[in-house]
Image 1: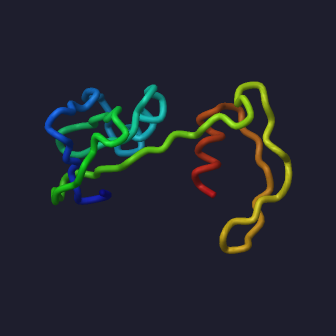
Image 2: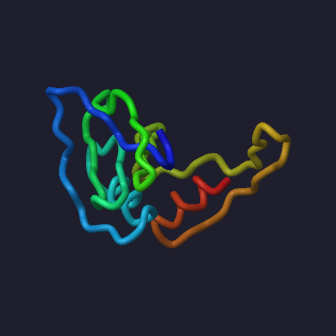
Length: 115
């Protein structure tokens, strides 16, 4: 997948639907906010949301498209109403990341993905 690739799906699978998204980042967030979303295709044809995990079976060259798989955040220890352990986390490069705070789930997810 990735930039310059269109998603290809198995013959029994239909994408969830097309959504209005002016930019790739908007399409990504529509997927994050759509229950069961497992991937997107964004390009000159708009934003397509895919809901079946193995529905995107391959990609094909398309200079106007981007095909991305999405793995959502998973609840840990019940999820809602729980704090994560507050300690420095080392990434694979050995750099420590200190916990950060945010005012919304979306901002928190943005911070997490940017690490």
